[in-house]
Picture 1 (cartoon, rainbow, N blue to C red):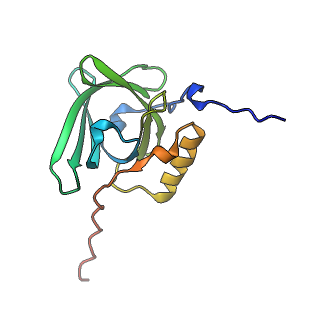
Picture 2: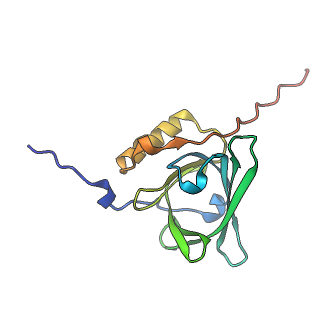
Length: 173
């Protein structure tokens, strides 16, 4: 019997069933991505989302240029929900007019500890975490699921992040 080959780029990309945008707001650390031209030399990359007065979302992407001790640089954008029903998972992001891009939340931890953002073409991909480091088992699970969704895992590049501060030692007792 012949094996059927499925071109995953032709299979519609699924988003998560629901996103509580208020819980999604805040700072996310980039754990890995398909590097884009605008991210060249970036380390310690974060994305911070906040609500604007007009109801849309303010996006501030920041990174350190050339190393964790390099100068900070940032870019600001605006995002809005494309499809309100049923999930709030499909957004558009615009860094400068008139160009905008798809920002689809394709994985989201139930406690909003991590998120995976993709593009329906599968040419863009970001793995985000609320902390600078991600549990290795969670990361490996994401990679496995991304592969099944048609993403080329070999294109992912880990983002250098500062180490999380060590917990304080207990005081004298």
